[in-house]
Amino acid sequence: MEDSTRVATRLPAARRRRQLLGVALRVFADRGFHDASMNDIAVEAGVTKPVLYQHFTSKRELFTELLTDVGRDLQDTITKAVASADGPREMVQKGFAAYFAYVDRHRDAFKLFYGGSLARDDEFADLVNQTERTIAGLVGSMIEIEGLSSSQRQALGHGIVGMIEGASIHWLKSNSDADPATLAHQLADLAWRGLRGVTPD
Amino acid sequence: MEDSTRVATRLPAARRRRQLLGVALRVFADRGFHDASMNDIAVEAGVTKPVLYQHFTSKRELFTELLTDVGRDLQDTITKAVASADGPREMVQKGFAAYFAYVDRHRDAFKLFYGGSLARDDEFADLVNQTERTIAGLVGSMIEIEGLSSSQRQALGHGIVGMIEGASIHWLKSNSDADPATLAHQLADLAWRGLRGVTPD
DNA sequence: GAATGCTGTTACCGTTAAGTAACCCCTTTT
DNA sequence: AAAAGGGGTTACTTAACGGTAACAGCATTC
Image: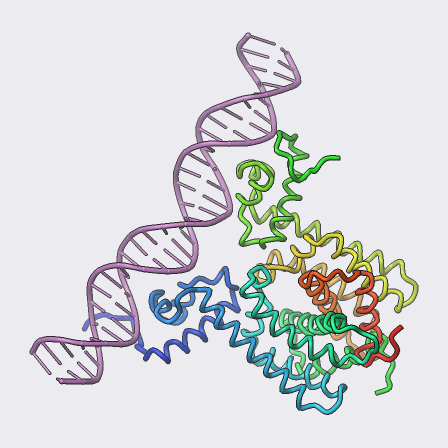
């Protein structure tokens, strides 16, 4: 009728739900689980809190759904990239490239996964750990060193995964305009040849 | 010998302060910054909240002091270990060994540093980053690959630091009874020779 | 043996945020 | 045109927690 400076675009449920997931991913990635309030998310989505609660029964459930989605995506991406390779050297190269490409294209997803307060929460941690464990297992099986037990391979695999994560975090943090593909290549090279360098390429 | 972390009686200020720092480290390491309340810390120390506030002006200040102490300790430990080595191969070995020994002997300190919600907070993150950057710089200078820019060395250094962190976190998480010295040796070996491996020992 | 000065406690305030009840309004159906 | 139903809002409850004022015992000092 009169004033109404508010343009409350009404959306069908399914569409609103998807929008909320997208906004929540962004806000959680930006502020972390604790520091992002349900009200923040609702406001950024242009609605109010109860709308959020019509689609998600709790803050934890919303966060859990995001974590699950991201974990599945990332795991699939890496697994497929590695599976498409021919030989261990190429597996390493393609795996690293796929990881950095993922981080580059899904920064919020990556920040959600590794930026924050999940280590403290068993439920959240499990979701992340499962993905990490899968990738670490993949890597562990690529280590061409004889006489390692499977738990030793797993431990070293986690080391390599940590290496990728550490480099990714540093890359995002330093706002480097370095090409992710280049970084992936150099890191894969380092992982394959070691600090010692040398070069039977 | 007395257990300085669990005394219920009246203590002189300096002693109480030290006790509170010890308890706070344990509680923060266990529950993280957000999920640990000042009341929790006070109760675990056998006193009440205002006593805590007689020694620390705020929760942030308390946490900051702990982070600073831990960062200094860790940085010194690694720097000295590396400085005592003779040649790059031994630097890697001694650096890794020192890191894992530190994690083993100061689990709470390590958890405080890498377990939690510091990435989100600029002040906390800076304290951790400084230590990480120093170590990453040390490592970066050990990479025997020609033609790398200093920022590239830094990036790869962060990768190696991430590798150590990732392996440490996995080691603590999996409650492995593996000897930290052995793990350090294997990881240093992996870092030095790369995934390509060649010869176990 | 009163005064002084710590160490410590009880009881409170203010804020922030999760979650909910009750209601509104617009569109579609009959 | 009246009913029905779903999308949305206002306003509230509850609970946790950081931080503080005021006060209480117990030494030591004078």
